[in-house]
Image (tube, rainbow, N blue to C red; front, side, top):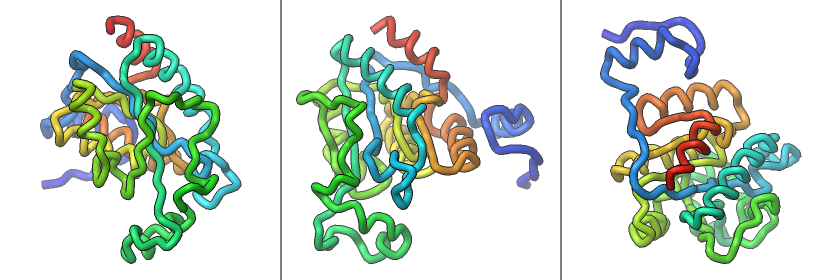
Length: 220
């Protein structure tokens, strides 16, 4: 029988944490031998509050840049994603157009899908165009991870309730250690952000403070 729990669906809800723990959720995946950083969809369409689905992700961007500095200094793998479709939109399904019409502005080569300059993407950092929420679906990300011998994926960017969650689930399903630095992930909806962090922390990976992630990276 499902018991209703009152209170906010968030990492800070100890009663809800207890319920999930009793049900067998919320174990720790920890870190593996070789981590990589994945930066999801920090392009103008998501980060400009004046755009249709944009929001202020400046604090998230600052946290991601801190992680990028560390991964670059240690020469650990880094990958970026964006979403982009042909101008004809023939590669965007009718269902996707109906459910998420904002995708129609994600035209390949347009300013909307370009990574923000603060990330300073380098020549050896792969840029993956993904057709759906998960960075794994319909892309070569799994091939890149295998080639780079990655077993731990630090997932950052946006949006928590969509592409971050979809990617975390896919990474978990592939047996990866999924690490989610809380300050380096953002969403246009605070409530969706909190609920998604809670669910991912209990189901797919470890949601950790940014400082904890940075400290852990010292050993690589």
